[in-house]
Length: 102
Image (cartoon, rainbow, N blue to C red; front, top):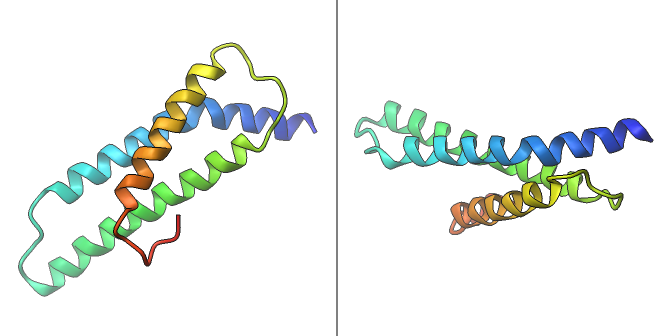
């Protein structure tokens, strides 16, 4: 299935940047002070949760991309190493959130 192989290769190359951006965005958003009024606080928490769910989806895509055992293209080893680092960073960001499956 060349289409699946191509998709996995695209994921291997694209996911590091997507994960980095999602994690950085989450860090910036969640680093600010939480709003004090209830309505804004709920919206803030919803935004944080949406960001975490986005990161989780990217991690699931990364697991799918890693399922391919075929030879990787040139530069893929570096991309995979970066992806692994980003996955570990994302998992660390999820620590303490037992209600969110990793």
